[in-house]
Image 1 (cartoon, rainbow, N blue to C red):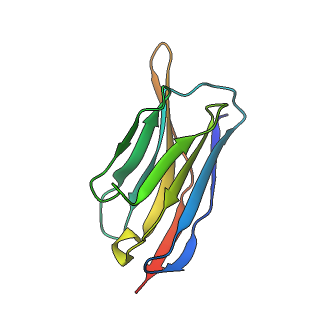
Image 2 (cartoon, one colour):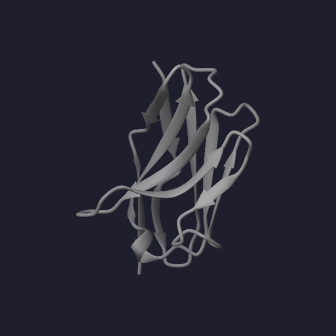
Image 3 (cartoon, rainbow, N blue to C red):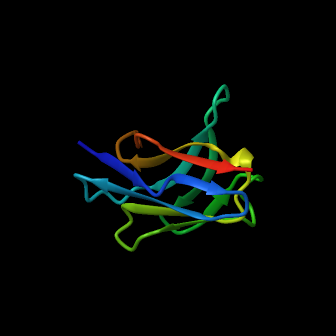
Length: 118
């Protein structure tokens, strides 16, 4: 019953910015970690950025210095601020959430398209 709802994707020119948002509905879970993955056509899904419950962020090399991940105080929302966007950032971006209880549960959003034109 946990649903991750994403928003904020769209079309932007090279050098532009977008802010992706993700909120978990139907849940008051305090996720162990949340993050963003992306998948470009013909490529594997890859981690862009993640953030743990304690606020410690991690970034893919391609995202460092350009993207910033943050979580809300309620810990069931995550944002990705993307600056200086490049055409190679074009992909479907997926929100991800991990919940550690008796075992590890993983949840995915439906994806939001980000297109960067040259």
